[in-house]
Image (cartoon, rainbow, N blue to C red; front, side, top):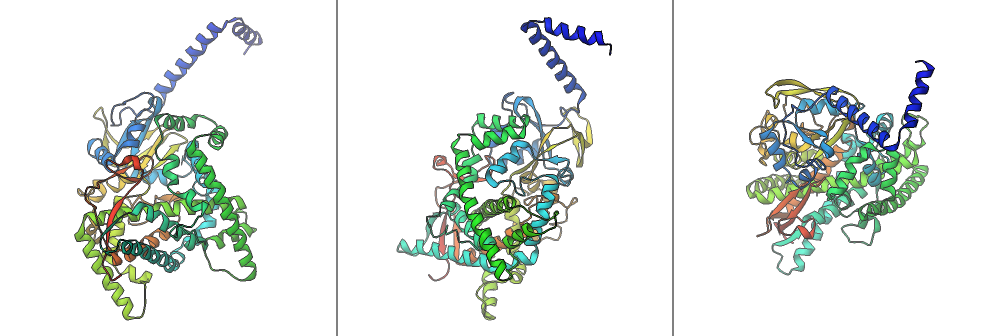
Amino acid sequence: MPHHFVERTLQLFWDMDYKQLAAFGGAVAVTYTVYWRYTRISLDDVPGPDNPSFLHGHQPFLQDAEAGELENHYLTTYGSIVRWKGPLGEDRLWIADPKAIFRILHSVDLWVKTAAHREIHAVLLDRGLLWAEGDAHRRQRKALTPAFGLSESRALMPRFFLVANKLVDKWKDVVMSEGSGGPHTLDIQLWMGKATLDAIGIGAFDYEFGALDNLDNPLTKSYTDIVYSTFGAPTNGQLLFMNLCRYLPAGVVRYMFETGSDPALQKARQNRVHAHRVARELIDQKRQEMVVEQTEKDILSLLVKANDTQDEESKLRDDEIIAQVRTLMLAGHETVAKTLMFGLWELAKQPEIQRRLREEITEAYEAARTRGGDDLTPGDIDNLPFTNAVIKETLRRHAAAIEIQRVTWEDNVLPLTRPMVGRSGKTYHSLPVPKGTIVYASCWGYNLNPDVWGPDAMAFRPERWLESSSEKTETPLGMYGNLLTFSAGGRSCIGWRFAVAEIQAFLVTLIREFSFSIPEGRNIRIARPGILVPMVIGEEGKGLQLPLTITPVRDL
């Protein structure tokens, strides 16, 4: 380019006043927007609802929708690929198609978390496994994997039974305090949160949270409903802010989350202070034990060993160990608590299924008592077909994670299980997706997809798992029963075996001791404001509740 041309161009800009510069800048912006709009891959032909708001898109509607009803509406009205609008008219995709989800979750370096999503994890969980991407994620996962094998998870079942029996004793005390020993209504969501927090403490760290004993433990208090109170019920303005964070540098987003005065963020930071203190105490104690003797192959021991190793591919820093401890504390108890309470809720609604389940469990306990055992072994539970069918059906019908959010770094093409008919009538056998598109791999959508689970996919029917074809899907996807509940691919839930063992121990213990029923006039709504939460219809102002009536079925 000739030198005089550059000089003349610079002089032209220098001579412009602010109005001319503004007009020029606006023209450039419009030109770039038009160019970008018509040269990038378009999602306009993907079926989906009309945009209710250019500013907010569908996000507020999705936050307020009933869990399950939204997924059923999308599947029956639009299919397993749905285009909906984010803020400022941005196209996003809701996906329940098995092949498309498989491609997304198995392409971990192409489909990643947004910056805002990662910083939310950083506030709640530090920079551990759920936050990390790329090589950092692979290194952390490699260090954690040995602690979550089949034998390691099954070895913890006696500890889970210990906490489950303690919960039984607490409930029996409550029933006896009423004087009659008969039916008593209690809020099981509160009890389950306490019990599973104690279970993760004793199961993974040999630490007594004392949640069931109502001990004055600041850490226990800081974990009460933390996910919901922090990010579970955002306002439209907060939703818009979190969505627009993707356009800001990660450092700026991090600063805003770390310094924001919002009470929810303050609670999350307070939880971090308490969790860091306990995590450091646990790590120091474990190091001292390992000097004296060879400790068992528990989770914390392996994390400490990963810190001391000279292998850079497996080494964890102290701050990363603390992050893993925080991740296990929160994710390890929240998800199991929700699975158990919604499983009991389904059994309370269907007494015949509950009766059949109790009969199978009671027979197993009688056999165990004959050989001199008090609790069931992992092998005993493996041989309870209906019990495991109920667990799988609960995990299918009430996945704790509603969806998995990802964004693609480059233009991509997603394969489809079934052809998609576009708004124009065109048939697509695969779907081109432009760079920067946010997608939601819907755990609930996939788990309720009639193409995968049959026309009765919305029904809670454990018998489906006893049918020979129940787990034979065209695209094997999930870690357990082909469910998406524990995700899939390179970022699948590393502790799924741990979670299943815990659910098994609690369910057989509680069903053996109590019958469950729905209290009269207390109808439950399962909302999905970012996470899965139960509320009593007409009592939403009281916060999270899941009241059930319990009745002892054995002598007190």
